[in-house]
Image (cartoon, rainbow over all chains, first blue to last red):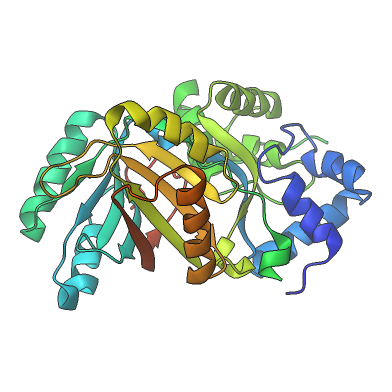
Amino acid sequence: MQLDATDRRLIDLYQRRMPVTSRPFLRMGEELGLSEQEVINRLEALQAHQIISRVGPVFEHSRAGASLLAAVAAPQHEIDQVADRINHFPGINHNYAREHTFNLWFVMTAPDERTLATRLDELEETLALPVLRLPMIEAYHIDLAFNIDWEAVS
Amino acid sequence: MSHMPRAIDTTLSHAQKLLMLRRRLETGLPLCPRPYQALAEECGLTEEQVLDATSEWQADGLIKRMGLVVRHRTLGYRANAMVVWNLPDEEVATIGNAFAEEPFVTLCYQRPRQLPDWPYNLFCMIHGTDREQVLEQLRQLRERHGLEETEHAVLFSRKAYRQCGGRYVGDGNT
């Protein structure tokens, strides 16, 4: 999909601060010089072409319940199976292969710290691999959607 | 515009309706002129209650952002690396705050070392169009912040087995 200047402005302006109001797309259209329906049509097209996954809130899940970044060193030839076993556990939010001895990285969430610790113990037992546990101590920069460098991606 | 609420379990408490709203919000707003009204009908709330709850969650930081959730890979950001650093503990905050100012650093956290396997205490994420761009940005980062000699590792991502950012009511939906 070719994005035009208006699509780019729509993305630049509304990754973080979309108005929370009865008719948000009308308000956005006023800023962009578009009708409410045109804004909706553009958002639908962006979604259909997988430029955006959704329009709405991103929750800070560390604020509700417990979550933890963890990693395992899976034998390289079994990495897909190990990743699959991890994904079958409840509360797995992200699961990535990365280039390191610790080659599988995932985020586990649970309603509370105790449940989280229990599940990680269970996971460790199921995988027969030690799980590296890396809780957040301090956030200097949280994921707030970065500005798209249109020149670099076009 | 008046809408008849759909068949809702009338025994649901207000708290349960709000939980339902959170779950529903996580999958995105419906793309219609009055999305909050549509959500209100689904959850047995009024539009005003939905708007108030959403604004409240936003104000207290439970909602960290509201808007278009971009799929960076589709847009051309094909490389991302988690870069981890072994810094003296007393320098972590200074460097962490400095990294946060860099446009290509998208996340930056302090995490504990797990010795002997894991000596690193600062994590940052760098996104780029390809590996070379990410490595060039890393080179700039090391130079600008005097980290040429600092032990670090670059963990490029290879494959996403699961990617569902920002799911809040994580329990039970996996």
